Length: 316
Image (cartoon, rainbow, N blue to C red; front, side, top):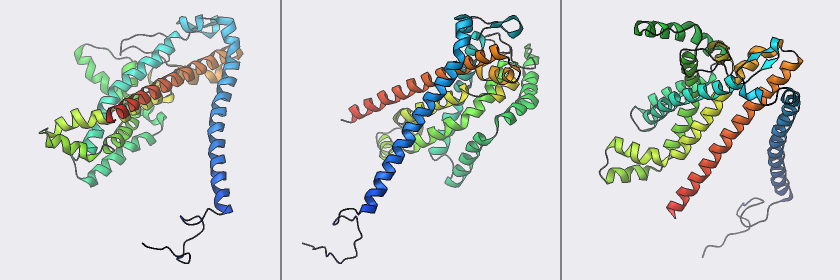
């Protein structure tokens, strides 16, 4: 049996001695600080909801359900319908998410499954993540001067007319803006899969793509789904690029060639010149956007928790 000497150089708080008063002070201080920031974050969110909701009450009292059921938004006629921007927010985000999910997952698979050398993998990963650092106004300018002319030249020979502002270029630019979020988190989810799972799939005779699509991706599905939810939240709140590309027209259409509007773009375009009545309506629009974002995140978190419980149960 090995005997540990008290003179072996062990410091305070080691396995043979209780933590010192300073160690306990640091531990307690760290816990209190963590609780402070956690409670502070919740309190800040509650305060934001309270202030915006309080400011939106006059608009709710004056216009009632017509705020979310009417398409007419004419401040000069005292008409404030937000139905078109609400639907436009959901529609543009869904379109962008559909595009970004496909390409984001493809990029994450390409970078994480050994298709290219490690050095190139790091380079391409950094390039994709760099897209998230580009300001949204730059994306908007790029959409106006490159994406719209490019799409117009592509569609006119096919008999389609693309206006100066429409949903199609807005959705494409928004998809590129969401792409780094989905690809980065999906990459982390795929690389966190236990290598033994992949080796077991090969041992059972699976090909490379069978192992990826039938074993690795399903195993990482929770993380991938989380990336999609975060991407959706990113798309819902995007402002400048959509304000520059959609056309600020309060009419909703499923056509990709028609202009439209979103809640964030509506607020950005009308807030500087809004009077008191319209200001309350715009604050209600902000409250609605916040509510949609919170609901999406809560649903996503709930689904992820259910998926995690299912995986734990399967392991047991």
